[in-house]
Length: 407
Image (cartoon, rainbow, N blue to C red; front, side, top):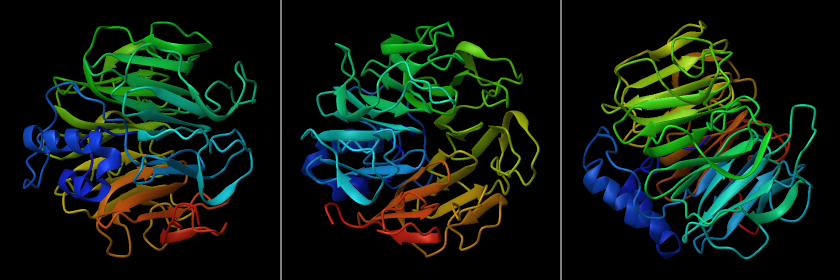
């Protein structure tokens, strides 16, 4: 459920994350100069593969847990720990940020349903938790309670996590995936049950970003073409069919995309003009088009006048951020994950309450987190496992402050 590496307001992040994430700042400032002008109000897209180690982003939401980076690159996680996804050597839930074991310094994080992955500034990928189990809980690899190196000699520039799989992108734009692959979500051309090490995604496509969903994966090519692969029961691949694909299939439009995000049973993207499009299952209005009708191809949200700089797709909800840092969410809202002060579903974008200005948003199964321009993390929605990080287990339909690291 990760986004492109240029998904935040680049100048603000560079001011706020200083030396520990210097690799981010180098690349973000390059993005601002070459992909999106720092003074622009709409994105212009990314036209080349990442050329330096940039990780994912310093805040990540998974199924029912969340993680973030401290200024020195240390990782902290909180929420559900039943599969070891907090990385602290325990399976206990934690309602406040808890230090990930191992003493590693990360440049970025990506959180899946029951796992977390991190990328060091040298491009080494580590994962912890469980990325190889089926819905019945049958595993083909043991749960890892602390970070374990992904067996690969390749350096990755970014990493993405899905339900029970993960993917990495090299600096040259080559995609590799590993973990559970029964639905073709690894993109290698098979429905193999499990791959313990990164396997090349078929097609020799150069990508700028990858995003892992439930049983599918999406990637954005250097030409701005969106590709998705894996399960397609809910039309989440966007190719105008419900046919699964074990290799990347182009999303069925002529839209040039700048951002892409895969979620539970739907996917969304931003055009180079910042226009939001979504496709797939829509029972709760998560496509944002004012209906609850499933869409087999990208459909513009309503109202079309909204222009976004980033977008993040959760299980059954979607959130997006304008270039000015205003947050909007739509879709399923049973636990307040839209952050509008209610638990009513919304079929069109609704402003997150509180008047906060964000640099980044990340959506989980039924909660959402964001980083403000002041570098303060907020979360809202379900809190049954402490995934909001405020020290309680009480749901919140408005943004609450995440407790400081180590509190």
